[in-house]
Amino acid sequence: MVRVLITALIGFVVSGVLGFLLLPLLRALKTGQSVHDIGPTWHNAKVGTPLMGGLMFIGSTVLCLLINLPKTGEYTAFYALALSLCFGLVGFLDDFCKVKFKRDLGLTAFQKAALQMAVSAVYLYALYKAGVMTSNLYIPFVNITLYIHPIVYIFFAMFVMVGCVNAVNLTDGVDGLCGSVTIPVMAFFAVVAVAMERWDVAILPAALVGGLLAYLIYNWHPAKVFMGDTGSLFLGGVVCALAFALDMPLVLILVGFVYIVETLSDIIQVVYFKATHGKRIFKMAPIHHHFEMCGWKEVKIVLVFSGVSAIMCVVAWFSISGLIG
Image (cartoon, rainbow, N blue to C red; front, top):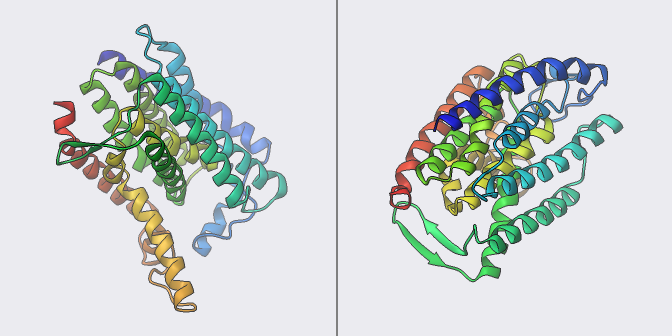
């Protein structure tokens, strides 16, 4: 447990130092987003804020895992990190296209989906072959496990992972929001891994708790840097990778409640808009923009959403009590 706490502290320090060094570099390279078509009009004032700030907590997480090279032969956290880095690389390519071609959209939706599906398939296959992941689906609250054919399970898992990663990405729309919502999720996985005595797995979310806390120093409103798709896709990768590494993917419904609501609000808005030829349910989607349009300040949105995330993580803990004994 002490090692986990020390890892979080190291993650905080390293991420903070990287932010101090990285921010002037990102500004010098002019990595700011040039066009901002999505969001309330007052977000136009944020144009030019550097992207790719996610490199702060990505770098600190990688260093923390290298420092804590497993002595038990348990490399699950490294599989999870590799998956997350691949998602982060997809995000980096997206951010690079935005900066390079001076546009709000980077990779096409098809390009993103294809790359994410490929990355997910490789990760799931590696976990299955290593014996870390089974094709048994644990059902929270009722404490039962259903056997699913491995091929069916892998396709189900791929769908869940790609959906989860993009849901986290969608949550990154207000200063400090994505990082603040994800901290309780990472704390949840760290505590669960400790309770299951998966010490090497616990290192990954612990490192990210520290890294994200330091990142928020730079990303809290008014943000000096954005994590970009580089950071949000990496975070989404970690969230779903840990759920599958600990063999409890359905817990994502609870710990990822805010991500899901953000995604559903966007889907509902688009479907209703097309079905009614221009009418809207929300003033703007995703739902954090709706609350902005209702007059909520960004800090209030972040505090409320992260509070909901924390509460749902507590609920999730009780939902898996039968699994962790």
